[in-house]
Image (cartoon, rainbow, N blue to C red):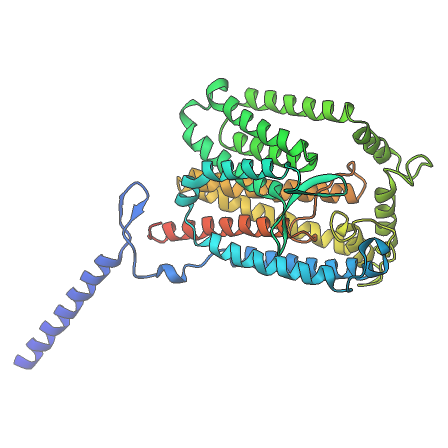
Amino acid sequence: MTTATSAWQRATAWLRGLSGKAADVLPVRVGGTDYRPTRSTPAAVLGFDQALLWVVVALLAWGLVMVYSASIAMPDNPRFGKIASTHFLVRHVFALIAGFVVALLAFQVSMATWERVAPWLFVVSIMLLVAVLIPHVGMVVNGARRWLSLGIMNFQPSELAKFSVLVYASDYMVRKMDVKERFFRAVLPMGTAVAIVGVLLLAEPDMGAFMVVAVIAMGILFLGGVNARMFFLIAGVLVAAFGAMIATSPWRRERVFAYLDPFSEQHALGKGYQLSHSLIAIGRGEIFGVGLGGSVEKLHWLPEAHTDFLLAVIGEEFGLVGVLTLIVLFVWMTRRIMHIGRQAIALDRVFAGLVAQGVAIWIGFQTFINMGVNLGALPTKGLTLPLMSFGGSAILMNLVALAVVLRVDYENKLLMRGGRV
């Protein structure tokens, strides 16, 4: 009897201890977005959106192969001097490595920190855009002054400007939530900031980057809840401004006319040369393409095949199937990032949500423009295909932006599982 009683007491004590431990590890909200950490799922194993990560890796790997394919014949062109057939491949690999390192560092930064440094990051980008216009400081390539030499690589401040405007606009909308219905107190200051960036970008000139910056800012204003009438008013002003830029610039007008009829005798060897050869390349690809490495247009017929017109080489070598696969991957990635942003806003993390959605707008819009240009649906514009085209600065900032999105997703999961950020 005594043995049975002692066994019962030990079992009761064990159950009480177990219930006490369970009470300690339950997630308890203690106010705001602060939660008591749970022991059931350690923060170290929460992870992030692995499907998104693997799609990004797949696009980067495909882009690496296509940059090599599109640039392998460039040593035969006297314009590039004596370079190895792997010259652009090696530089692209270096950009990917540097991008991964910087992206890993960016992932370690909390969204609260990004929110604090947003205004300062915007100021730094303005200073770099000014620096690139200073003679003997900014590098001139093909008549455009867009790069700063860093020794091991050239950096394009306009790529940083896209990211800094995105972060600054998100922070601005959070700070102006209470006056977002008032034009002069909410929208006008942000419009002025974007106008300053636009003037500096047009001075390079880089109208394509200005278009991306303007769309990012507009998208964040709209998602942040700006009055619809004000939104359409600003959109109308921007459309009129871009129309005026084209109307007052002879070479921009020529690009539009060449887009309308690229195969005419007047444009085929002028402003329509790139577009006409891009369309020839995509036409040669037909359904399944001519095979990897089999492109003819990349053999000095199609200029900038490894940068702005990489999609044309993909279309020629992989055909309609390759182009459609690429479109599906980018659409899926953009929707996934938008979902992460909506999830953050649902968790009352407005800044993080707007940043993620801004990245989706950036990548989605720039991809749309690049593909539209390559397919002849839009006038020629110097914008690269995100994550794939050759260009160290673009790859670097794309990876940083995506690392920030993964950080948003990581913090979302942390909060939903009872952790704290």
